[in-house]
Amino acid sequence: VPALPTSAERPKTLGKAPDVPTGALFGVGDRLKAVFYERVDVEEDKWGGASSALHGILQRPELSGEYIVQEDGTISVPLLGSIPVANRSTQQVQADLAETFNQLLGRKGLVSILPLERPPIYVLGPVKNPGSFKYAAGMTILHAIALAGGLDRAE
Image 1: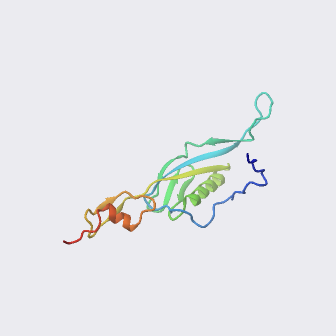
Image 2: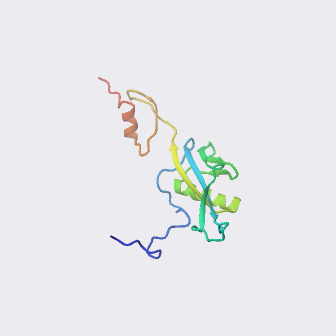
Image 3: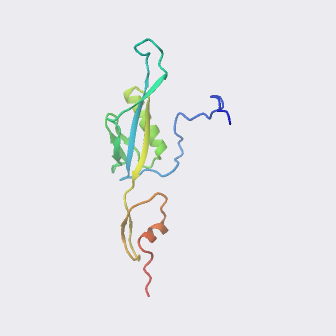
């Protein structure tokens, strides 16, 4: 049975998301879900004993919810205002929201972002069934043409 790594052996995490985008970037019309959490210090319990945890996590439902990227590339979050998200990765948006939370509310915030839906794509031209189709992550032009029934070849 392998032993658990000590704190010195565990990998260190970055305090800030990298500047290099990873994964898909958000764009106008994208729908995303943001869940906000606040780290709170747990005080001694009423009996005078030390708490088993030094920190607690509290969800902030008044900030959490589904957001749509507006024409100006932002989402509007209650208490935090307009936050730019267009052309940014999930990790970058999480870091930006957590930093804004920390600056404006003076508390340590944690944010989880889940991309929910992208706007539809439109396939036009010499295909069998032109029209709009639901976007799927990793979709290529060939996938889009296949969704439209393939190229319309004159017989």
